[in-house]
Length: 168
Image (tube, rainbow, N blue to C red; front, top):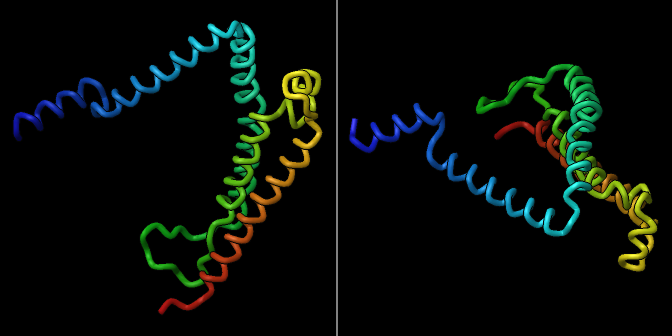
């Protein structure tokens, strides 16, 4: 083993991961620290802390059980054979679970980020800040959700059609 190889091995055994991992973590902490200074500098530190703790609690106590149950329900559908690097067995079909997970996850992410505007909870503040109503947000979110599921369903249909075609 070369000297460099021994050093990398010692580093990995002492730290638990490679040096790029530590560099990535340091960059993440630097960005988070910068964001925290901007929040405190804007004078909204307490509101941000309440929102952050509420979001963590809401996620862990409400959302996690909901999407875990939904995922379990989807995965309990008739089992489909795995494909990982093997030839497709006769009757192979693409898994539906990711064609539901991805649009649902993106839709939920949009809802979480824009919740006050979608549910018109920030109408007065929003109108005062930008002079516009929050009324279009619900319809736009529903349209985006419909498009996400439509594109995903179309992609699933194309993959199912391609799976039925005989391989050449």
